[in-house]
Length: 131
Ligand code: AMP
Ligand code: ZN
Image: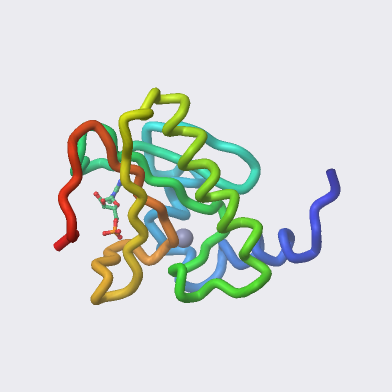
């Protein structure tokens, strides 16, 4: 499969500006250790270091994207792939009883790491509404 120009420029962007100091970019690169759960050419999934449920996995794009708010139409296939990856991991882990997918966005949304990520939470009943 040939790599699109967009992919090439996204790869270059990973090594510029904010992305250079981005925690999740470093985890994707492997320069900060993590416990891998799933990976392919577009996404990487790993265990959350401070789990909020018995199962707590983070799914991130390999490409540095600051938040969901910073995505555009060109990211839609990737966004679908991120969500589909969560479902695939949930099936692999036998989470048929249910789980929650959370995306925190920006300051009021509670986002603390500025690299888009989906939380997969499971293994206990979730409360509603979230805090
Ligand atoms: P958020 O608050 O939505 O930005 O989520 C960031 C998540 O990253 C939190 O749940 C943290 O526990 C998690 N986290 C922070 N540092 C690490 C790390 N080095 N490895 C794995 N998860 C991390
Ligand atoms: Zn990043």
